[in-house]
Length: 472
Image 1 (cartoon, rainbow, N blue to C red):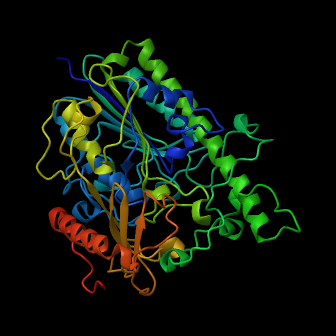
Image 2: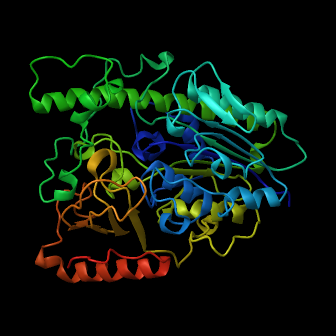
C-alpha cells in the first residue's frame, strides 16, 4: 500500500471550547469542523505539561518532559542527542518540512535540522509577530509582509508545490495564533462587534480552598497592566470590580476568537489544496494545539495549571483510508501519543524510547478494551511569569489529584522562593468546574489514598522522581 502523506497542524493556546465541533461557539469554524466530520474527534485529549516549549517537545519526541529534558520555556532541544519524529520519517524517504512556530531553540543543533526544509518564526524568542513576521531558514532570515496565519499557510502551500510528487511527505505547520496578544487581521474586526459573549460561570471565582491557585498573577485583571497590547480600548470609568472583569473578558475573548477565524480560513486553504491535487484520500490530516487555555475560567487567562481548561486540547484527525467519518472517542489520549500514532499509521517502526501509545486502534474505530485509565502531568517552571507553583498530579476519568510542591528544583528558568506545599483533590463528575478541593474531606480519605498510590505508580512507570519532601 502506498505510504500516506501527513499534514500535522498545531495551533498555540487553542482550547477545544473555541471549536464548533466540540460544542457551539459564536464564531463558525467550518473548515476545522470538516476534519472532524470527515474523520474523528477525540473528546478527552490532554497535554502533559501545559506550556509551549515542553508541549512541542513532547509532540515531537513522544516522550514526557522529564525524559526528553525539555521541562520549561528556557530549555532547548539538541538534535545530536535526541530522537525526533522527523528522524524516522526522513529515514523512510519522506520529504519533511517544519513551517511556523518551532519554539524549541534557535542555532546549531537546536534548529529543526531533522526536517529537510524548515522556515520557522524567529523573533520574540521564537514566538514570532502577528504582522510582518520574520522567519529563520537554513539559508538565513526572511522577512514577510502580511498576517502571520496567512503567511505561514502561503509558505506551506509553496512547499507543497515544490516537493517531489513521487515521494510521500510530512508537513508540520505550527501556527502562532491564537496565542496572546490576540492580534487579529482587520478583515475579522467586525466579528462579534455587537454581541456579548457568554461569560464562564467561574469568571469571578474567589479561589477559596485552593491557595496555590490564589498565588497566580495570571488573572484577567492583570491584562490591564501586564500587556496593554491586549486592550486596544480604554477601560470605561465607573465600573466596579465585577463589571471591570466582565469588560476585560469581552475585550480579550472577542480578539481571541477573531484569531481563530483566521486559522479556520487557512485550514480551509490547505484542505482545498489537498482536494484539488487528489491528495485527500491518502493524507493524514491532524489539527491540535500545544495545550489549552483559560478563557476567563477561574478569572484566569494563560495556561500552566493542571485544571481542565489548561490541559484539555483539541484533536481532530482525518484519514479516509482508515478512519471512519463523523466519529468520536472518549478514550484518554495524550500529546505524548501523537508521534507513535503517526509512525504507526505510516507503517513505520516506533522506537523503544517513545513513551506514548499509538492511537491507531482508537482512531480506526476498534475501541480497544485495555487502555490507560489515568494520566500523569507535571509543570516545572516554578514562579516564572505568573507565579504558578511547580506541581504534578494525575487525572482519572472522574477524579484529579494535584500536588503543589512549590520548589524550582534548579529547573531552567524556574524562579522565586519555595511556596507552601499543598494538595488538591477534585471530583470531576460532581464538580466539573474544579471549585471544591476535597483533599481534607474525610469522606474522600480512601479515594485520596488510592489516587496517591496511582500517582506513585505512574511516576515509577514513567521514570519520574517525586518531590523528595512530599507532604502527607
